[in-house]
Length: 179
Image 1: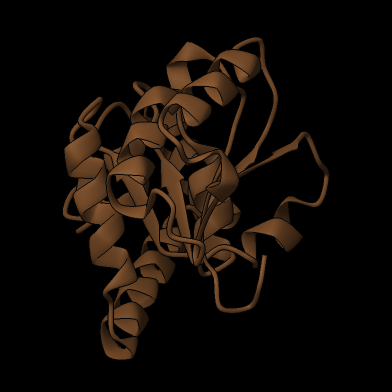
Image 2: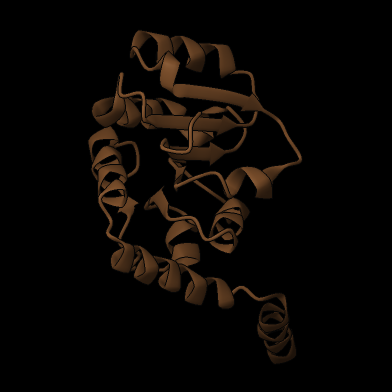
C-alpha cells in the first residue's frame, strides 16, 4: 500500500452475519482494478477461503488485503479512510464506536442496533444486502471534500459522546432505580 491509496476497511469474524459477499461485491462495483483503492479485511473465520475465492472471481484480489486477527486494531483503524460494516444484523456493534473514536468515516448497513449507534439520520447508512447501495455510499465517502468530511467526523464525535461510559452508567442506573 502507498500513502496515495484510499483505504476501505472492515473488522469482524468472517461469518455469514457480517455479509462479506455484499461488501466484496460493493467494492468491486467501483474499485475493481484501480490500484489506488484497497480493502483491508481484519478478522478470521470459517468463510475466509470462500470469501477469498469470491474476491478472485470478482477480480479484486489484488485490491483486497486479508490481515487476519490482530491486537493492533487502533493502529489499523488509523490507516483507514473509510470503515465499512456490511452486517446483516448486529447486537450492538462495538467496532463502530472504535471507528468513530479513531475518527474514521463509516458506511454501514441500516439494521439492528447500527442506526442506534450511528444515529438514525446518519448519512451513510445502506440497505442491508444491497451491494449497489453500499457501493454508492462508499463512492460518496471517497468524494467528500474536507469541509464535509469534518462535518461528518463531528457528527460521529457527537454520537460517540452519547456512549460515554459515565453517561451510560447513569442511564442504566436510572432504569434500575425505576424498577
